[in-house]
Length: 344
Image (cartoon, rainbow, N blue to C red; front, side):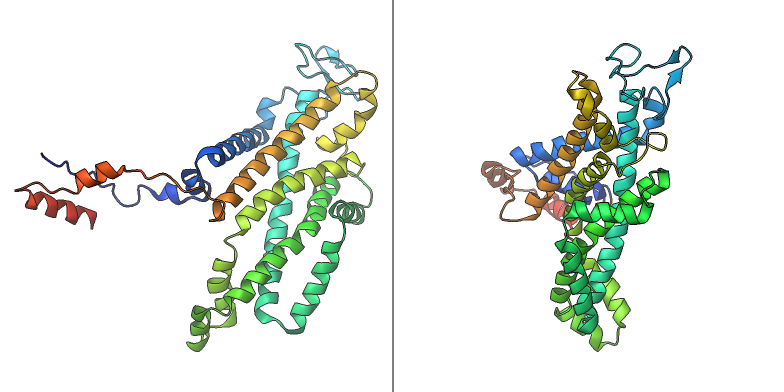
């Protein structure tokens, strides 16, 4: 029996397997893999729609007419308007597509601001301690005690001054969501920093004379932010709901400035009692699908990150195959030595 020489992949060709989502996807099995793949497909679809909204949308988000004239108010779905028109005479399909872009813009700005501010404050508070730590804890607990939507409404009113515009609406919504998320990142990073700064390698860095800034940002920060991707995915769905809630309550964005799903739902409430269903079903369905996709991704990553919830993967090689490959034929010592050299 002649043993075939295994093919050794050159170094650097499997770097993509270590990417966060790809790594968890290869670890997942069964229901976990199904949830993760479903969430990635739904989220990826809406990301593509948001990126190419100008190409996909048949009309602009504030367009009321075409070459044939006005669209008309509350027109049912037809060949010209696949999802119908709203009470204001806007194309529903175009509003839904452009609303996807608005939603992701607000989410990206809000998560980036809350991520950097919350991580920085948590790192400084946990590492330095003292009176600064106590003051930041009191402020974070006070902010965290407010209902998230109520805090977002107050922040939106203060920032935008009650005026809905592109900057006054999108930026106010992003800042208001940031105010809700900063305490979460602060508490997580602070707890991790307090735990990590007592590790031996941090004490060794202090002994050799490393500065506090170098220790904080090179040694502590790198190990304290490993769980943040999970929090980011879970907070993304909450950010979408908070943005929709702001728009539904009248603190969203005017249709002449940008498209927003919550605002469209607010304007379609009176249509439901009249049997006009298309003005509310499609914006609401978009909210549900985006939240579902992001939540599936976040929950799947959370399960895979917890060893108690992660399902063990099946062995890639059967025991019989392993036993057979472990038998070395007579007269093939040179071949075995060559295999060992390749493996090393």
